[in-house]
Length: 621
Image 1 (spheres, rainbow, N blue to C red):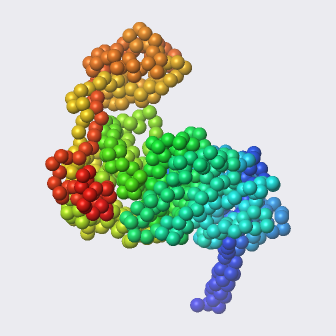
Image 2 (cartoon, rainbow, N blue to C red):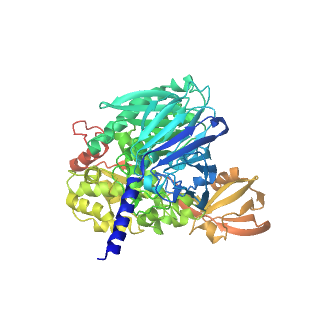
Image 3 (cartoon, one colour):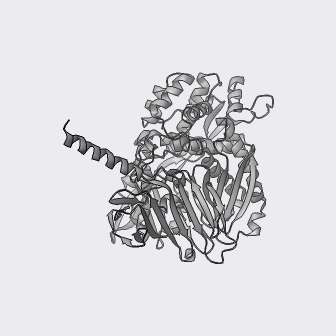
């Protein structure tokens, strides 16, 4: 090797060492100023240390964990600027919809300041007003790839005179001179830990010596009347029962502290799971009406179950999260569908839902799936993979061409649960599979695959190739009859062979007329040539108001033909629709009168409740 080559190599090594010496350092600091929260504006400044490149790309995630949809929240960022340690401005160029390139000017430290418009509670992204500020960090905080694994520090300053504001988050937080400081080990933990600051009511309770918090925001100082309702006062105990019941499935609680962020306001609905917290949205009626409260508890159960299923063991396609594009997996039927299966099953085991109410809801779910045309079109595998472009971008054809990985995934999980029980004499169940996945993949550092699920199942109860071919990869009907017999149950159609007329249409009010929003195919509406967007104004020469549609059908019988007058593209048309037949009675799941002891024992361990009239069996699932 020549002297020149040796010297050149030495310079390269020295340059590399210098670069390493100036490698990215943490923590990444964010300063959040809520002075203008009342105007729904949040001001943020991010500081990056150890900058050693000519430019740094800073990004905002295009989606948030827990919702498989591109949100493009970067569209509501404004006034983004950068500066160096000397406060001199740095050049910033936007290079794509969610990325800004900062020219560093050789500075080892850069600051990026920006504002976000926080005006949406929908999708649980970010919202601010004069009562609070809610931030889902994936929609609020910029990041730089090279700093993603470094510690994070967030300083929050509340609005002036907001002396009654409190902070609630699953992350560690401490008060400081201006407000609070939050810390997280890295950006991924920050992203999975929503922040709620404002006028709250906080209830604390322990579950097996682990602290839990229920934090209520109502859009004002939480009303005493709501907090004193019988159902709200029962809520902490109900949540504790849910947590204990789910812990029994998995063996341990995978957190040291858990926070429930409850947004309660008119029209609220939905929830999102996070690492050791969840955001639940519910209307005030959820604490005034027993049925609404039960649905609220189902949502709570669903989100808590995700603490294990998704937040600990996670499909490989979601590990690690890529915040800049869709993250594909064929296993949402497990991540979401199996979670949906357990949401009400856990309530029954916890004594929060009557077995008969559960069986009634199960029958309705089976009936809805069998009547959905998309059940013969889309597989569960495809539904999972295409969540980004189908389930979360539903259109008027959705019922004809898709199924829900939540709904059918839950029912496929029922089939799987019953199959495991039948093969193992009720010694093992879907609970066993859930615990095995948690034990083998306890951290989301490595995701599991379909092959992993099949391997574990084979160890538990033999080969399940036929189940995957039919229930997951196929589009055929599921054999609920055989599955339910495992637990001494059967399907029964109420009112036997009686039928009622079916138009195959879904209508909504449109200026006093009936707008067609869905046409099920095959079906009478399709045969009549109607399409979504048509506006029906008359039936048999009589004006139609959408409120009168069901009453009109009640006076007809299957086989009757209706003359439909409608508008399409402002042109009046006429067609004839012949009504089909659909079952009049509900599909019921009921107990077999001649169920044997084996089936009754399976029922008891499945629901965690005794077979009616039999109080001698072991009810442990």
